[in-house]
Image (cartoon, rainbow, N blue to C red):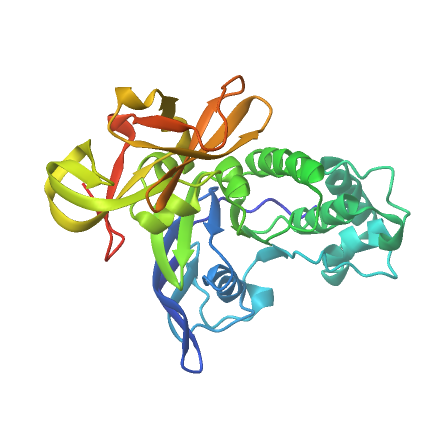
Amino acid sequence: MPAGSPKVPVKFDKVQKYFGPVKVLEQFDLDVAPGEFLVLLGASGSGKTTALRILSGLETATAGRVVIGERDVTNILPKYRDVSMVFQSYALYPHKTVAENIGFPLKVRRVAKAEMDSAIRDAASQVQLGDLLDRYPRELSGGQRQRVALARAIIRRPSVFLMDEPLSNLDAKLRGYMRAELKHMQQALGITTIYVTHDQIEAMTLAHRVAILDRGVLQQLATPAEIYNDPANLFVAQFIGSPPMNIVRGGLEGRYFLTNGARIDSPVGGHVDKAILGVRPEDCAVVAPENVALKGVIYTTELIGDHTLVTVEIGHDKLTVKASKDIHGNQGDTVGVALRREHLYVFDAASGQRIR
């Protein structure tokens, strides 16, 4: 098998991409550490796949530089960039066996047959395909096909793995299994990995760091814990979390947030006419209405299993509370919602920026 590449950094330096008048990436700066598992997270059209394709050489940047290791690869052909890409669609050769699909990158390099056979068996064993080497893609399940694609990427021992939504075609149970396999494999191999997804669970469970994009602009780059607990703006706060962060509209007056006739102790001070208070469902509690300032009526309850989601309608806003599975309450009941002050976030309603 080709010798493993040393861990290398990756750098996007003021990368811009336009398709005609349409801006897809704007002043995109990103440094990926050697051996890091970095996830590019965003909705459709956010620019994440375009960034990956620019790094692979499948797209050309309108402006800026791309650096892999010490090499500026901005104008280098894809085959000379030493990257391996795994696609959502698997991209397997239907007329080749599993072994032939996995070994194809080495066949192109004209690696000796004995060495290639050994490398194929090794790569296949890493993704638990050792007993399926003689099968064809049509004889495999979706998860098995994806593992063939991963093995084909592994066998090259590239400087960088690039993965574009590789698990999105799998069912929920298999996605969970493959997430664990991917994380284990990447840590074992130590290869710098950039992974594109719109699935926040994949991002939170796989990444060393997450880069969140919206309309071609990097919104925040941080660890999953920092993204969740210290969002930079309203977009990030609502994009991460399931259910998403609750928001309540109102105004900031000194040390109080005023909304729906209630005065709520704010973690920050100031005077903002139109502000938004954010709080995650697990940081709320349903209580007796006479005990708190914030009151509303139960809109719906949903028993999830180990907990119940209670949605409370307060004026024009709805708050979802993660409550005990044994909570009692009926639609239309008046209740209070207690908020943990130390876990409240305040945002400027106009800009969406966090008020700290």
